[in-house]
Length: 349
Image (cartoon, one colour):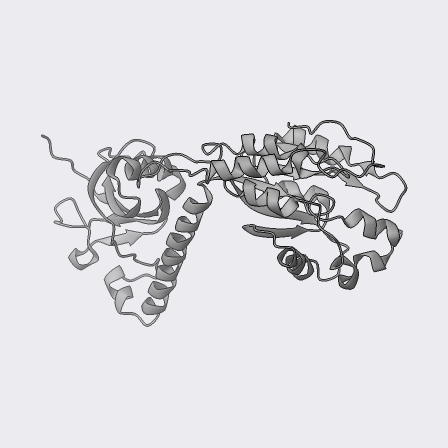
């Protein structure tokens, strides 16, 4: 054994292995028994949280303490926070000291007695609580891959409305949109997919009246089960919500007021270039044409992040027998309109 002499120590609070708050506790001198403010120590909140993040993540995994506060010290005279420190202690119920005002000149012990301390303390505690709540939500959302689903011409037969009104403003009013009929078997298909994916509707409805509320009401009216609804202004805005781990199913068409709609090849190419996977839903087609491929893409491990300190993520695939039964029920000609041209096979990038 050897004695480690350090003038300063780091107090780092973390959530789900990710640094949330940190500061230096600095001894008055090497002869001081402690860096606590009651023992003459002082705090420096100019702390490089981002640089210690890799070590904190490894530490949380190794100790099995995903949330807590830890004290670290480095043996070097000139501290290199990229190197691995010594750990003095870790506690899952660590308290948090808020930062002092930028113009504070007195000791931290004096700040604790100052008028603004309690407000600052409650603020950082609220942020800490919010971070823990979001970590729970985030862990839940990482259990399955995320499937983004377009609405127009994928689950809603909206092209008929747009063509009927020749693309005029009336085509996008709430009174007209709410009359749209669903694509046959769409709700049933998505129910099967929800066993393997988080279903997140992602639709571009910038021209629509009260787009979010009307869309949400329409989905509920027709019995769709899903996890989230996101409405963006134009198709290209969808990519901001996607990652290489997610999957989008979209018809990629526009100009439905015309006799022959056009393919939005530009958007497809943007997704390819960004490495964002997608599956093309055939315009006028059915869910039976893409459902088997989508179910295969929803392998339980596909969207899972690293194992966390609380244990490996156990991603349940749902009732596979029920999902297979739904595939069988949707098999056949799929209800394609007889007069609709048959698009190319669904493409996955």
